[in-house]
Figure (spheres, rainbow, N blue to C red):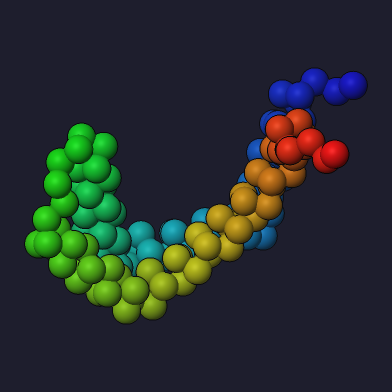
Length: 116
């Protein structure tokens, strides 16, 4: 039986070489090179981080917080460069979910309800 860590590192290598990852990397580079898109992306990310921090600390998220997040999300989704990046992120996320389902299958089977 192969070393499970060797298998994990091979999976990492394969992920880096997968077209979905290389396309995401190219979309991220394009976004970073577009000053308007990059600033908008950073603003969007900072708002998300701020909301996550509030949730983690139990601080209430205000209507203003929600309105601000919605406004920046609208602006970000209206930017073609960011739209492309988000589409590539979604594709990679789908791949990661599929891989995770494969990896966790033994646990799912172990804890599955007994069939009587």
